[in-house]
Length: 128
Image 1 (cartoon, rainbow, N blue to C red):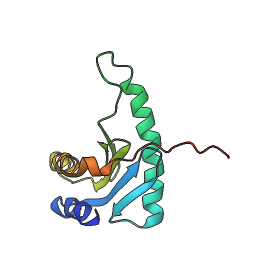
Image 2: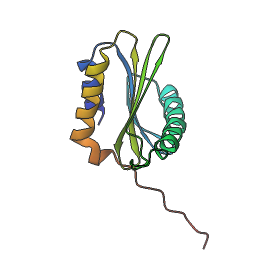
Image 3: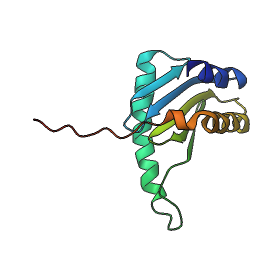
């Protein structure tokens, strides 16, 4: 999966980091970032995804699921997109990134490999 994340980053100038994470905040894959940074991003994304789902549930005609979150901060943008059952794609980009292009490339990547980016729920293990 690394080459696909690298392809996303290289196809959109000003893309800094690409992380695939599970809904419980575990980094599943990364490009352009160190392991500790990817783990912190994944953990933060899990919280943001949960908050977004709570907001989505307030829309009576929606299905209660988060599709895309975009956060603009001084210095750049953060994108979080649903990428399969229990999996998400996160991207950090500089403030002069082409926002439309990064969104399109993220959607393209999710469409191509979304079924492979799923993270099934963990089974509860019971003591014998």
